[in-house]
Length: 316
Image (cartoon, rainbow, N blue to C red; front, top):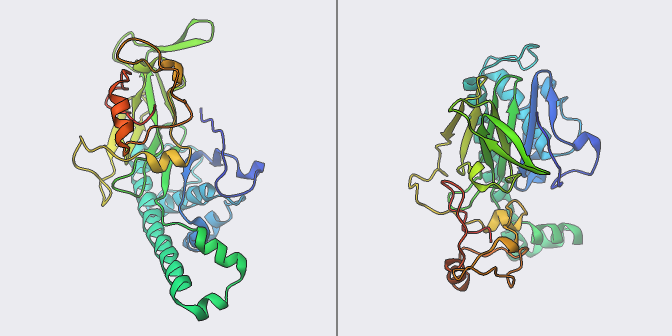
């Protein structure tokens, strides 16, 4: 089952812009955004064959990403309209890697255009005189930013999820998974994942943990793919490109994703200091920056067990 709560970045609020998007056996969702999408939207659409161009009914970057995924899948020799689906996790993973690679390249093009426009606006008087007030304001407000590509796709049998950002130092929007034998309600309104044996019967993936059982959730590493196979086996594969970090101890900066509203926060009532008392002076809506010296000193006094393999030191 796919479920999505949309906070729009591109496109108006309408049913055609709501996730998930469907094409025969394939279902697709996106959390994040393609940087400076308006500057490369035409490039996106020109890449598509007529069939997948007509798949796009709304005005979002996300639906264009889905159409591109379908186009890539077809170019690899697999018909997306195949009624039974069942392309297999390897095929979906290959198509996703290629989709991400193309968007990554266009993001570089978009950021280059932003830089060129800003330079001309500042240094070329004749260029500035030709622009309307609205265009000048648009250029002034535009930024060179990475694209955030947290995608989820299924063919009805396998599920593939990406956590990716076109940056070597920034952290992608948060993403977690939980797996076990059964997801049970322990008491009224409180659930946790029960593990009877090593075989998975339930696998959940979420932008944020949906329960308070922290040990039930594992963070998916930035710039990687998670695959859920037909037998509920979970596989993790890194996306190895110029933004890949070989050092497993490297801590990415969460500031960009936090400012975009793509990272969660620990409620202030859960912040326990080293003297065992609840620290009520910390505003749960104010994230602690990993680059602020005073914030780092405060973090040392806060004892919250991190999610396994995560180092989620920014979510305070």
